[in-house]
Amino acid sequence: MDKFQALLKALVLYLSLLSRSVFSETNTKGEICPQHQGTDPNNVNARVAKFAGKDIYYADDDDYEYKIEICHNKKENAAVQQMGKKWTKKSWLTIGTYNAAHVTGGTDWLMIKYFKGERYHSHCKNVERMAIVLVTCDPGEQKGSVKIIEEYRNSTKDSKGDYVPLECYYLFELNHDAACSVKDKGLSPGSIMLIILIVVGTVYLLLGFLYQRYIAGAKGLEQIPNYDFWRDFGSLQADGCNFMCRCSEARPTRYKTMDDALADDDRDDTLLPM
Image (cartoon, rainbow, N blue to C red; front, side):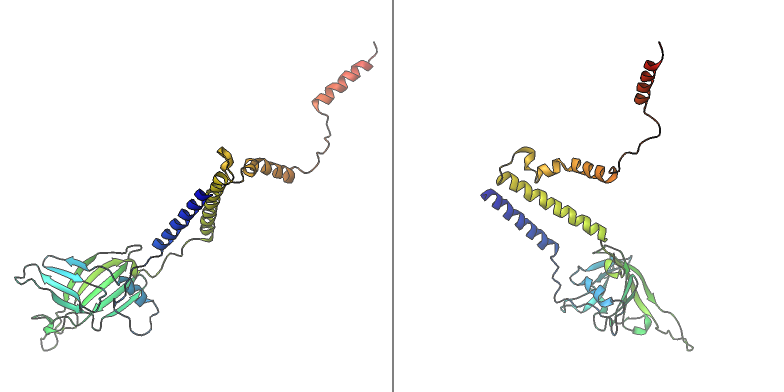
């Protein structure tokens, strides 16, 4: 009895630890993510919130290195930063901040814009830098990777010959599950029923085995719970099938069987005159 109680307590402890590990969540309190202003029909804000607590992303090209942090914890206002590989003074240049950052999105994509970066020195008429992060859907990808697509510098001129800085931005691409708007519907009812049957059957066999062995004192195959029932289970099925499918009486045939025909022939021979 003591052994059975000890095993039962161990089983309950294991199940509790398993459920605790499955339902544990990452603590992301204090993280602030870019928000979509106004109505949010595509559930953009909830999708972007999945980046809270994530690591910083890094990317590079031939001349520059980039550091991107989608969400922040109020300690750092710079969201996207740049540093030249050949710069003599190694320091990060801010090209996008969390101030007035905006996010929009549609089916399987998100676009995050970080404004109010440091001004250009000689390009784009000294406007503030801006970074755009395009997040594409990658189902199941919880980390993702960033790559720089381009640094676009508009070179349009007006009638006076001056450059018109309509768009000057850094464009990045990030693959992540957060951009996916169409999620898996989950398990079908049949799959759920199958899982329930497997779990119930496993618990039935385990607890029944422990009871038969340590309380009933059974040995060998008799340790299987309800052994007599399962031993006769096949015969019971055969009896049920015989009852359901062979319950009608046999119909008489128009012709005699071979044995009856031979017997009649023998009797006919005895009636012939000698």
